[in-house]
Length: 264
Image (cartoon, rainbow, N blue to C red; front, side, top):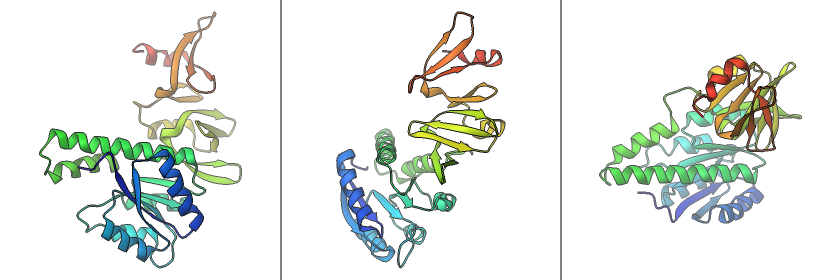
């Protein structure tokens, strides 16, 4: 069972400032984490991970010696495989990272709010693992393996990330951060808790890739995250609107979509 009071971690990145930033920020936002090693190259990181057997590894993809993907591949034979959070300035590595069983993926420069989100995912995972062990034989490795498979490799193919632009930058936006999406001219605006992004994928294609339990298309031009809805209200004309819990946003609901809210 992973201890929820103390969680060990290794940080591997060739940028000293980023290692310092991660170490300091983690101590502030996630005091249960104990950073047991901090390395600047892939070979040292691999050695530290094998020695310390940490619960979590924050792993840069582009490092001297061994790159982060190679380090991750070198961990597959370990009895205890840590949760791997890849860190990189190059979002084109995202798909390859998840193929190597990445638990999460952080883009440089690492945003503190995004790092907090990752820490929350780690906490939720550990709670789930401990709960699973409480319900089964504590020595049952297979029970934990099944749980890890469900979390890291869900059976559905719903989107976990949206590749979007913000100014001149191309970003990977976690689907968990999206509040709503709205078709505007030739683009779709992605509104998140951290800002607005643009994508070219039509809404009719996006809705097929989003989990229908989490996202509803409430209008021909609007998809909303169900958890972001604070209340539903009609105006004096009888038109239905959803009010989101952030930024005082009000979104119109089409007549065809009103049936979605009968259960609310």
